[in-house]
Length: 216
Image (tube, rainbow, N blue to C red; front, side, top):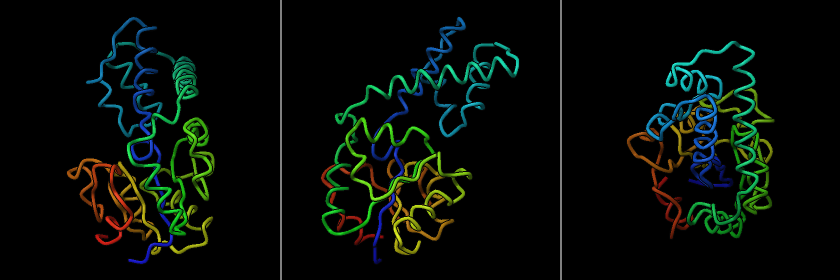
């Protein structure tokens, strides 16, 4: 496969911010008088903010008006942003920075494709914002994955065709988005969850681009 560009999802691929979402939800639950466990948090993965709030309220046997729910969701997000404001380069997942730098050294274009509206803030905090030729985040996208919009915008920004792009994703919907956009995809994480990907890896540590390109 000819690879002209690589597009990376952010959370679970370059950095792990899931723990901060959990801490913010746990804080909201405590404020309303009940506990929210890591086991409970599994139900929130891949779920929108408002749908996550509904699950949280169900766990706590609480009810709230639509206006109260909006305020609660806003408080949760404010706490999440407060947490990620304190992120630093030590939170880059092992090998990710080296892998991206290796790609750039080979003249391969690199993009970020994330639904997060906080993606640029996170990249600034971990010192990687200048490692990407373009950043496509939640402020530029209308349709959520598995719609391929985020990846197609990235390809357009980079001036390459979808067939020349290789996407790195940790979520099933992200893998499907890459496929729907006519791109190859490397899953990062659980092979059972990411079975539709062209290749699945457990991370970037001690991995070179050739280890990937020769197999997709």
